[in-house]
Length: 428
Image (cartoon, rainbow, N blue to C red; front, side):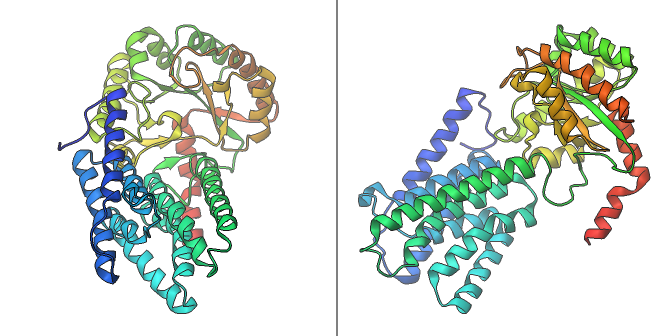
């Protein structure tokens, strides 16, 4: 099967399941070659072939990452060999060299250097495995590459730890505990760093992504996701009108189609409009065709309904794929995330929502609220506590001397201060 993945929902999950299963079977195969460079070459070919096949099925980073997971697990613990452990590093290099050639080549070179300095295969494997996710991030700047590196890191670290102790038989149980603890620690650190640092703050400068505005003035931007909603959006608009402040609404395309008059009211009352995809589907697992559809359909319905062509985009849950980021840049969009979340999607009490926002706000902050949506979907949630918390947040920030701006205004002000350019020069 060639071309992008066209399945939706359950069908897409089934395809990913097939990719994982057949990659695992491919990795589990045992070729009658168990010597030196020939064995290493065949193992590398397994990894490269798995990634290549995944690319033919569905040319997305997620599909190739799933294929890598399958082939590495199959290679490392083959059921055809009664799950006897086999080295997986060459399979990892084979897949990596196809998916990210420069990173794979540098990692292999680093492994040789560490081996030359330390004289230990285990130390070289462990050092490069721990370094790989950061190398991929620096070279590629996309989340899926860091996840790709993390998969390799977990498996290679697990296999390298026993090699550090020559008396493995006598300490087998202790080594297993160490292996398990090391893997859990890596996963915990990666999860914490990725979701708390990358998703909400980013690594390095990302000039095509806005997470906050200039810190030179006491300004903030209120933003609302997932609407318009017939119950909560009108009340939020009334609150904003009462205090005379603007906000930015990142709208779901199908909600604009359902409630066009609400969308027009948002624009009519001077608020900014941004896109939040057509159906609020997560962008990471989507094929390129479906990613484009989510972006283009939302853009068209917002412009058709309100007469405003959105220039800003916020991905559902703040998570985006490499392709979506590249496509949005080419279409002239600026991606807008946030640095302060109300966490109102969790339906917290109003006083906790307000206290959390006020505790973290700083000059230039972009505040995330929701005028629709539940924990998982883009609709059906209870936003009564958001309605109660919003006036408290507005009044307190006004008392502190803050000025409310739309995202458009915040971007212009930030550009006029030259803060982004100065930070880049400082980091150069």
